[in-house]
Image 1: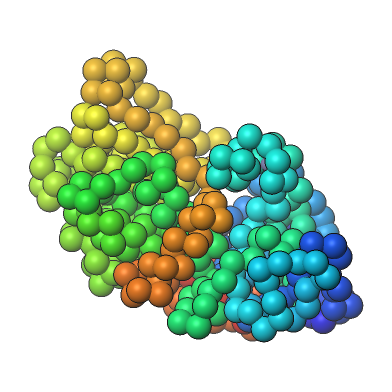
Image 2: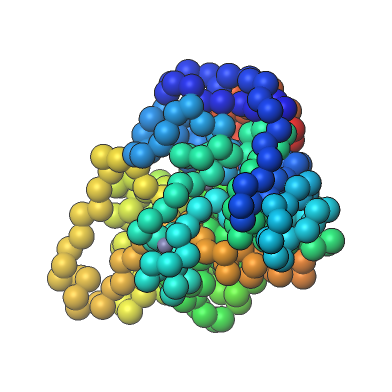
Length: 339
Ligand SMILES: [Zn+2]
Ligand SMILES: [Zn+2]
């Protein structure tokens, strides 16, 4: 089979021919039909994510059909249409047992980070990582549910506990942010999107944002013009830059919360504890999504409440080109790689 392999940091992925994998105990093999390309892939390829292992087949948002299952595996059958959850968890630690498995203390790895991922024709992984797409969700849309859509849902629903009638500000309308706009709307929140790029702001409006505001000198006043002077119940940040995070905190209303999804090494958030205390602000982080979150977003997509935004498609051999386009900010929504 063909696979795109990261052999060294800051170098193009290399096309390799490898044997089609066979499932070991507890495992299944899927034929990859689509795999999303994420901003994190740029960080992995440039060595900015700790703990990656080379060489590795990159790609952590795969969907496909099951072609082999080891004996004794239940709940997954040949022919099933599935999306993969990228965390290979232990299933035993306190976090795994309390459905917070992205915090697993004995993680065997993450697809496309430490273990081979979805930029390949076939992928072997623990069968428990496979979640059923059913018949109504396509592979390209389905691929995004394990990360881009699930991560937005985890942050807004599980972590920030956004409620119907709340107000939300979505800062950064990239691959995760555009789905956060839709999830917030599906949850009944009034939503303002913030970004630097006019085309992304337009896309946010098309995806259900009540207003869209360009990040710049006057953006705080503009956001408050839409939501009221107190600010928002929930501010979702997918940018992770110091300047943006500090502005995001100022948009949180008393009793509200900033939920951080984006991060970059070397970027910090400076907080005024007086305001945090007196306004009882919650500053929380949100890491990826759980399997239960993926099941929830599959239902949202099947019901038409969220539509995964796939704007570009690349052949497997063109992953390097896709990553160049992504780095140049020329991919709104998500691109998928179609082996
Ligand atoms: Zn990702
Ligand atoms: Zn665990």
